[in-house]
Image 1 (cartoon, rainbow, N blue to C red):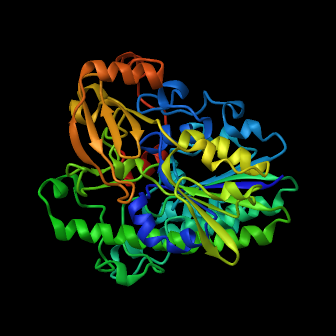
Image 2: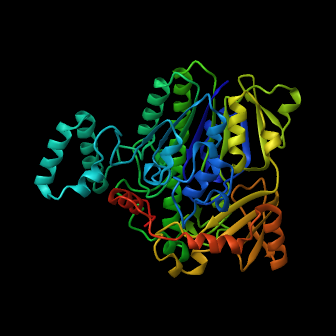
Image 3: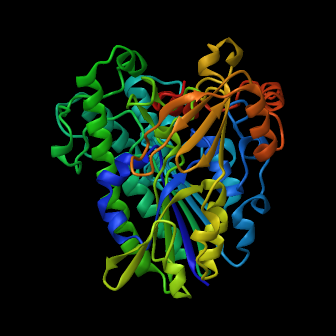
Length: 488
């Protein structure tokens, strides 16, 4: 029996990862070069990673964003009854506000407003306190001193003030976007566990808004210390082809991925030191990000309804996988290379679906290697609606609020379709996140794809999903956090 860890590098696409996460790739026993997400934004993608089902099956999508309808038995965690389920997340969608914490025995949620989760949530305090100015600061000081964890509450308040000051100062931001806290919280959970564990960690450092952070490699971007991406309308910048501005963001994005590469490698080392059991770590992303690259039709971000390769082609690497039982197990779809230190690195170029991620992790927990059996086509993905404001979704332009499905028919061909139209795309396994249009797909072929892979027509799913629409119930601080991330 082994510990298993699922690391989600939120919003990291495969091409940037392949170029800038060289340490993780260099240490990997398995590289899933064809790894594909099952949806293109956080809520449905996390549900798919854990359940092995698509959005129309697990019911988490833009029209219904709650995880409370899922139990642990619905997820791969239910197949690990001897493991303690641990989780820590900086992603508000994969957090307590939407019921994601209910899948775990222990769960920590971190944010810039609560870098020490045991202390006061500064954003919540600010929403609930009616005082203003110095009176509000005095009220916070009194509340922090009276809190069960006064030092951590005071630290939360001080760090929020520092973040606010540094946001306006021409110096590098001194704190990252959660990676350091997540590592601390995850290791604390691991050290407190006396059982084998299945750990989930979601890092949000590559998610916008972007600015230079102390620890980023300055050679990867040209953004001044005082610059932030927060005030720019990136959809408009992509539409007008503002290459200099787009490249500035892309450079910061690359620097964030490089930073995560270093932090996660150090985290893995500390994990191995913290537990006596062998621990296998799978690193992936819930989805990528459109960066107006070729084939992305000037799309930016991941809130609009799209299933581009920039969104679906995500990292997949496995560190400290169980040793293959047979020599033939080392010969995979993409061959095997000497990974150094006597290790053989298996590279799988065939498409690998997030729907198989749970089976892969359960196999690793039991000492089994299943990359070959789980890879291959067809691979399916699905998205329902716009992931911004849920209310008034029917008023959004149809192109930003569609129900879409994708089918990878081979490593070289993908079809993306809605109830009304469809397009085929050429893919190149040697060019991550790339696609090129290859002709339209008629109604008969779309119906055949529905019947072969999904079990429900896309039109029926659209009607059923829209019937679930309604205003999401969330706290004011959750709403503010989502707004700062660009979702509202």
